[in-house]
Length: 219
Image (cartoon, rainbow, N blue to C red):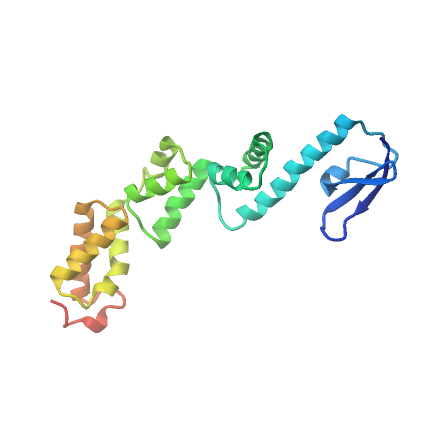
């Protein structure tokens, strides 16, 4: 089969239409079409290889968009690609390419996840383990990412933020509700209780941001 024309697609930027023996045959990503030239002879096997490579290239481009929102684990990327009906071999090729480019790295992802939670939504080690397992992260990688986690400090931050919503209650109700909240966020009972007692004392002293208005009304 002779390659008789290569034309840019109007509807999809970055893709080119390939014409064989005067007729439209298929389209390719520009990076793959750049290897071709008009007048080139292509065997059926070469055409099949180009089309298979195009599937991988297009999937890779989609993955770059998916990764632009936040880092992803290998398992997240595999599920994302599987939903697009890619064959397992194509999925493996895309993932290998992403890993070579260091765009997918489970250890880096686990560190990111723990750091992000620490900064915005503090959780205990139990909850973080569950979340990372759900993302397909291996146990040794999870434990390495949690090695420096300070649950007491995390619980204190979570308690300080949540104390405002329970500030109108007396000490008994405040304690019960805040401990329950912290336990639901994966903190052990002892850690949750210690953080709750500290939050109560700080609130009474007017040290918890946003709780000054209840000073003198709490018991």
